[in-house]
Length: 313
Image: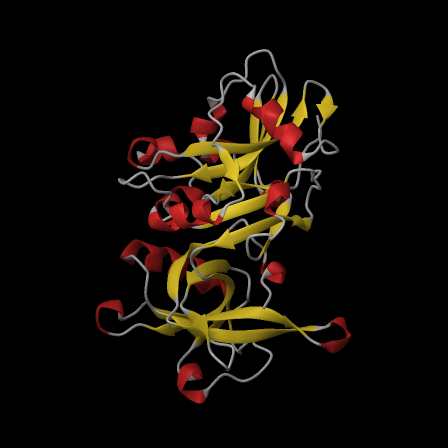
């Protein structure tokens, strides 16, 4: 049984025109996780991060009579039955959720959508459609359905307040750790991963803490280099608990000068606290401006499953 396995990644885009060659899956607003079920159960994220103690609900999974590796998403559902990344944030960094009462207040579910290993055989070479058929035939698992590649499916996810769909080519093999156009993520919402480069102090109710975060992403330059570019600042979408948590994480990262490749506008840089660009988050936004800034960004949460170098414009 291979270990650890890096998940295969999708590219952003639109629904493919050759729809007959694809199936659609719901894009779950959660955290990617690989689950290894053998004599014991292990759960890893990207780059082999051990998630096992964080999500004991997954450790209760059983596939009677089989040894398997599953690819899927850890999801927390809100009171309306929709995936909530905000809720999941409360579980991401907790290694003993039972001690904090979170197993009852913020339960999670595992949504398996791919089968990578079965009883001694690594299935990377098999087409997606064949892997799905094997996955759906396993007892003990609740496998979310896939659908024909039809715009009506994407419309339905929009009506239900879901993030979107992933279009997967039926004949595609599995390539661990590779971002491939065989899988296309089609989102209903504009979202962007961002790297935190600093924060501006709060005022009023936020006095003494974070008022807004300064955001960046890496832009490719000629010759293969990249610059850390400022893309805007965000001051909405935070709970008080999230701001407190961010303050605790960012204070140890403080540095005396900006790490952005170019100077920031003077009115934004004035009074800013700069940090090493090590924390990745995600924002929702309406559009990009001509200056390559996020318009009306709203904070969605940290992305501990991402690394800064992957956050590109």
